[in-house]
Image: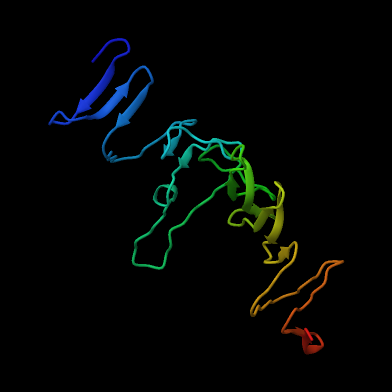
Length: 219
């Protein structure tokens, strides 16, 4: 139909339900069957794609433009797969630049390159983070060189705090108590901060120092 407030409906050749519906009053388009796209799909900035719901939810203070929302395993998961006769795996990629989209400007030491954050409903909203993994940078950044840092954060009372950090030199810094069960092999130095202790509840601690090999026993 045409005219002010008109809608457009396309039906299949048997005259069954509308396959395509455009409602002018709400500026919405509905497809009631599979849609096959042979080419790129571009969404304008500020437009979103929501799977499983009618509107975007706000998480962590932001309404992400790509969301998958569901009520069961099948409709609340995302899968990335690669099927090829080689050892190369599928990947999830983050990129951070200080330039406009598609251009280049060097990031600086301390820039976060990507984050994985988990939120929980606290009865009021979805803005409270429980834990996160942050991919950071440090040191000198140049062509072909972006030194990396990985930070693991957890929240005990609403605020995320760093629990472990892996620096670009492969040095691991941990906060709190480290409990080891079974055998653990450490290469490099082990430093215990002031006011803390290295203790054994059972078994032995074997070490190799400049003075030779030794054993510390829990007994």
